[in-house]
Image (cartoon, rainbow, N blue to C red; front, side, top):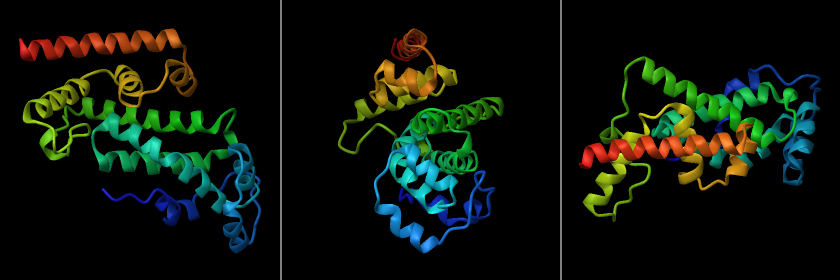
Length: 213
């Protein structure tokens, strides 16, 4: 699926959205020309809050790909992942003045919460994600049939887990994050995350053993 990670800034949502507090009018041409200047996240945020709206593109370019991949692993749907990402980025832009601490952890939690809300709504509506309707997130064309089937079964089993367990399993075993990084991004403890991953593994093992018994 072709993606436009900066497309969210091209829609009316951002141009018409409530701007971050204490923004001022700036020359947009000058702002665009300054986008090649490197800066920390906090420096970029200050530029946006000062009225340089186009500077938000720097944050989008920096973080949209890993955020999209997380949403894709959580939902299994490229379209849903893209929707969650765009809604989350708009929300991040509108509440940019509320950032305390690291921006990457803050925006990750917005996306993660969007994924959890989507999963809850799906479960509440008694809907299920059909593997045949979407390409496998993990399988590749050159894999043999048995391996592809196993991966699809794993995806199906993963989709039955509670959102918090699925999130921990995806971050650890699909995205390859350390427990320390996971704890930092989610604002919880390493011990709690280890327990979630352990419970997710046990649940997945039980589901797969039942199928292949």
